[in-house]
Every structure is written in structure tokens, then in C-alpha cells.
Amino acid sequence: MDLFFRTHKFSLNLPNYEKYELGSQLRRSSDSINSNIVEGYGRRRYKMDFIKFLAYSHPSTLECRNHLIKIKTLYPQFESEGETLIQEYDLLGIMIFKFLDYVEKNWKTGTT
Image 1 (cartoon, rainbow, N blue to C red):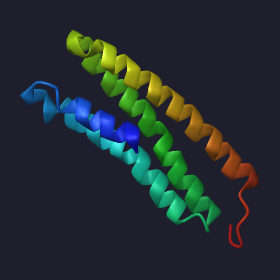
Image 2: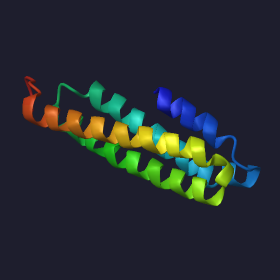
Image 3: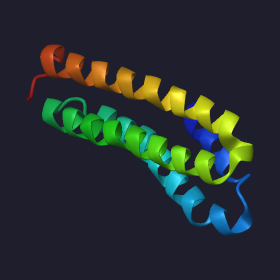
Image 4: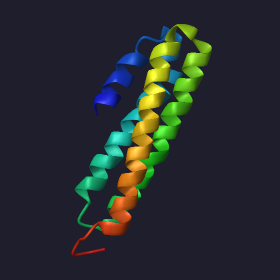
């Protein structure tokens, strides 16, 4: 959630015309990550639903990374902060992937 808030704030520093284009795409993909994790956790009783929503959240980390690469390339003044966020989304992607693997192999529910 913290990464979403920092990304949101970062996107609002973009030039006005970009806030509503690339910035909006970045905000939506960042929000998609935590929203899918939360929705999946809400369905954790149903293992396959939990897995499905975790699987949705993982590629959104790659989408965020892609938008951040575009931003730091187009706007060199955002390169440092953009690179930091990219590294954090890389780490988050790894964490989600490992958690997804854990849920697939170890999650116990009454209903699968």
C-alpha cells in the first residue's frame, strides 16, 4: 500500500499533460496490484479465487515498471526516483510470485 501511495504522489509531479496520460496509467496499474491482492485475500476461503487474484496482481508490477521506464526516459528529471520505484516494483513482483507459489502449494481451505 505504501508503494502505491508513493507512486501516486510521484505521478502527480509529472507535467500537467502527462498526469492524465502516462501518469494515469501508472496510477491505475499501481492501484491494481494492491486491489487485486486485497480482493484475493477476501476470497481466500476459495483457493482458486485467491490464486486468480494474486496472478492478476503480478503482471501489474511489470506494467508499473514499464510505465516508470517510459517516464524516466521521457523526463530525465524523474530518473532517480523512477529507478528507485522500478527496483521496488521488481522486489514486490518477486514477493508476489513467491507468495503465489506458496498459496498454490500450501494453502489449506475447506473448499478448493
